[in-house]
Image (cartoon, rainbow, N blue to C red; front, side, top):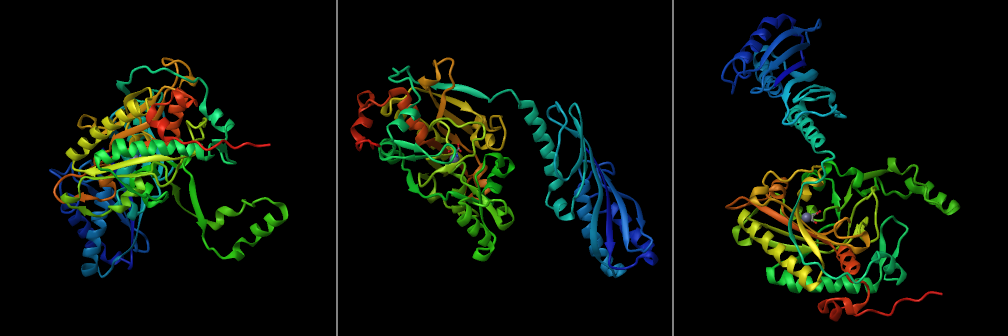
Length: 508
Ligand code: SER
Ligand code: ZN
C-alpha cells in the first residue's frame, strides 16, 4: 500500500526570512520521526516538495509513504514535531493544518471487487481492479486522521467488497438437530383466529397488536414454565433492561453501522417551550390532523427504540473490572417490547414491528460462557421439545451480531464456539415441511468478546466473553398455535393445566 498526501500548515508568523531553518527542521523530521519504526528508507515516510506561500505564512508539503509509517501517522508526527521545534527555534507555532490531497494506492483486497464500490463521504473516488483498490479521499481533518479515519475508510472498502462477494449467496446455515415429526392439529395462520376470537386486535400501527387476556394467559404459561424448567435450574435472575437506546448504545454495539432502515427513531423536542409548538396545537384543534411538516427542525433525534434487547444492558457494566466472585453473571429481561421497522413485509404474529422478547444474557470467562451456552441451549431444547411439544430444528447460522451489522458470514471464532444457533419451527399453514419457510422462534448465541470489548468491560483475571438468547413470545405462540390449534385438548398438559382462559368478548 502506498500513501500520497499533500498538506498545508499555517503558521502564526511570516517565515520567509527563516526558510533555511524551516528546511532544516523538515530535513531533521525526515531523518528521525518519519523513519521511526521503519527498517529502511523504503518503509519510511518522506516529506518532499515543500514550498512556502508568498506571504510566508503557509507551507505546503507532500508526504509519501509505504505501509509501515503510513502517511496519516506521519502527518500527525510531523505536526507534533513542528510544534515542538518551531516555538523555540523560529518563535512561531501552527495555527492550522489542512489536508489538500490524500490518496491510497495498491490496497490488496482479500476478495476481488465484483462491481464499483461507492463510499458516500470522505471519499472522492474508489477505483478497483480485481483484488486491488485505490482511493482518493476528501474533507479529511487532522482530528479525523488522528482518530484513525483513514484505516477505517480502508476497512470500509474491504467490508463492502466482502459484502459483494456474499450477496445473493444466502445465509450460511448448517443443520444441527431436528425434533421428531409431530402431528399437526391445525392448518391455518393462527393470527386470523386470534383476531376472530378477540384474543388480540390489530392497532393503527403496522404489525402491532393489543394483546387480550387470553393471549397473555398463554404467554404467561410459557413464561412460568420457562422459569421453572430453565431459569431456576440454571441460576438466571431477572433484570429490567432499558427499551430506549441513546446513540451511545448502537455506536458501541455496531448497530450504528447499518440499523437505520430498520430502526424506530426516537426524537424529543429540542426545547419543550409550549410557544414553539403553538402552531401544531392550533392546527390540530382546527383540522383534527397532526401537523408533522415542521417537526424535524424542532426535534433532536436522541436514539432508537431497542432493537436487539441486550445491547442496552451493557451500560450496567461499562468501564468496570468484574471480580471473579461475581462471574458468571446470568440474567434475563422481559420488561418490555422491542421494535423493528419491517419494511420488507410483516406477517400475522410471525413478523411484528413491536414484539415481546424473552432476552437471556450471560457474562463470564470463555469457559463459563461456552458452558452456559451449551447448558441453556440444551435446556431450551428440552423445554420446546417436551414441555411445549413443538416440532423444530436447530441450525448454526450467521451470528446475530454480524447479521445485524449487515454481514452474512459465520464468526471467525466459530471453531471456538462463537456464533448463533437458531431454533426454527415448522408452520403447517405455510406448506409442507420440505417446501415451506420455517420460523425462527428462538436463538442462542455465544457472542465471544464482542460486547465486553465494545463497552470496555474486563474481568479481573481472565478474558471476558458473553452470550445471549432471544425468543419472541409472539413467535413461540405462533409456532405453538400453528401446530396445535385452539382446541386445548390438543395442547401438552403442562400448558393446558396452566392456561385459564377468560370468556371471549362479544360484540354487537
Ligand atoms: N440479541 C439477540 C438478537 O437480537 C438475541 O435476542 O437476536
Ligand atoms: Zn442478545
